[in-house]
Image 1 (cartoon, rainbow, N blue to C red):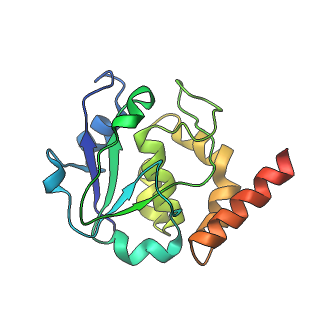
Image 2 (image 1 turned 90 degrees about the vertical axis):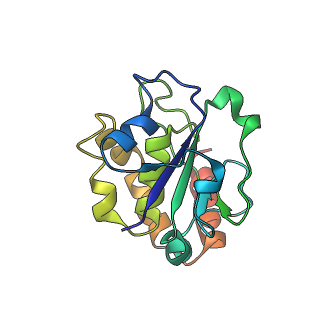
Length: 169
């Protein structure tokens, strides 16, 4: 099991905040400060130079971190020293706010996707009953997530992503 951490910038509606719901459901722990994030953890970042891949599974045992902030404030994405940043490959959002939009996942979608890619299917399955959009997320992205989860490393994840994008354009 991979420990999941949420750093919540408090920018979204608390009633709709998937990060707060992950903490409330016991799917994640809140990191109240950046220094509370474990050294060596993987931080999901839209600015990362490498894509998350199964090769990151060992590092993820130190922690998988999602930064909860709105897409409109993404330029304020915090930097965490002593961690590794990883980006998610191409996926479609299934949440009610961004349904069908590529790469505009909410925090719980990002963690769910990362867990599947890292090979933690059982832990990822715990999201399915907690978020009503989660089964739709898996329907929309299941094949891609399966392909990503079989990749050897970040470069192969990016290759799979690019081949998929070429096939739909």
